[in-house]
Amino acid sequence: MLSYLLVLTVIVTVEAQRIQGEQKDDSCVCKLSSSIWAFPTVRFEGGQKQLQTCEENLIKFHNKIKDSNVQMPKMELSLKNIKARLKPFEYLDTNGLYNTLHLQQLMQELDQMYYTARDAHNKNPSKETNDLLKELTNTKEDVQNMYKNNIFNLETMKSRLRDLNNRVQTCKTIPEDFRSTCHQRIMSTISSPVVTKLNSISKSYISGAWGRDAKRDSKERYWEHCLVSGNQHGSTVRMYNSYEDFMANKNYKDENIASSYSHKNAVQGSGTILYDNTVFYQCYSTAEICSFNITTQTTKRMKLDGAGIENKFPFCYYSCRDWTDIDLEADQNAVWVIYATEENHGNIVVSRLDPLSLNITHTWKTHLFKRSVTSTFMVCGVLYATRYVNTYQEEVFYAFDTTTGQEINFLSLPFEKVSPGIANLNYNPVDRRLYMYNDGYLLAYNTFN
Image (cartoon, rainbow, N blue to C red; front, side, top):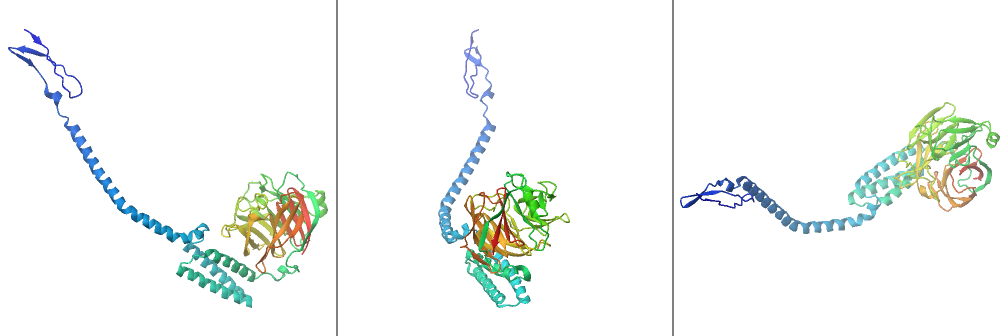
């Protein structure tokens, strides 16, 4: 029997199938399994579903494009209209003074000022307080009109409120003897240095403060405070019971204000002052004022709302003096704190503190940018600011009188120094001297005021 090999190629799985056949009579017979040609139904159905899903997604995408082509011109037109409507407010937007919330804040400030002025008028009626009440009433009406007419000229209104607030603060009750020794409102002359010496520790201690107890009729005490830890912090103040001891660096006592430089009651910055045997200073890394009573060894604290700290608003005229955000000064019957706030655009704010209760009794807002001055001090309720002239000369160029609210920008009172940087400058009402901490040197000046 002849046998034949029948080869059939079946393309089903992309493989060749070899099938052997045999001759029967006149025919070639081969057994062939049809399973190799089975139709892939499952795969076909899966492909059909994917195709249907793809078609549905394509239809949706096409509809979206169609809708976008219709909506896009409308959106572009609306955007142009919004830009045109907002353009008049761009100036106010860049100054952050344009919304209704600011109007509400203005109204609250006005109400507070009105009540303060009304109380002052009830206690001590005068033409000044009466005129002030009328002006405050008119200003409140202007703010109401801003609500109604949607006119947001807040920069002008805030400046107006600042001036009104200063007048209100002046009208508030201040002790009768507060200015009794101030026979002349504005300082006229500063002498050459009458004291010049290096601090008692080292010339490397370039930041600190020094002076004499500023309380009238207080015991003669001289003090010295040097900052350590990167000219930022301090925990002790060095006390002398006489001028002779101070000049000779002897018989002193180091009073511990805090247990360490990083204690919460430690000193931050060089804006320290001694008043009535109590050290007033900025508390460690906070917008708070601390007072440390040397006699009782107790510390009080009070929060200074809105004050910039951590070198946000330091003294900065020639080169920035770090850690001078808050400056404490003393006067006849009060301690003053000088600082800056964002609300006042970085301009100097002056607050009067009651030294016993450590409460703010009055606050005035100036137009003087704090970073544009070298240092400040207070004399008879008048704020003075200095600026750098050269390495060996400084100049008092500005004054703000808390009695009248008047700002004086044309002063020119030059005085000498021995080094460019000023860490602290404070006035003492007892001996009428200015005390300066000048890059590690301690200087004092007579004043004629």
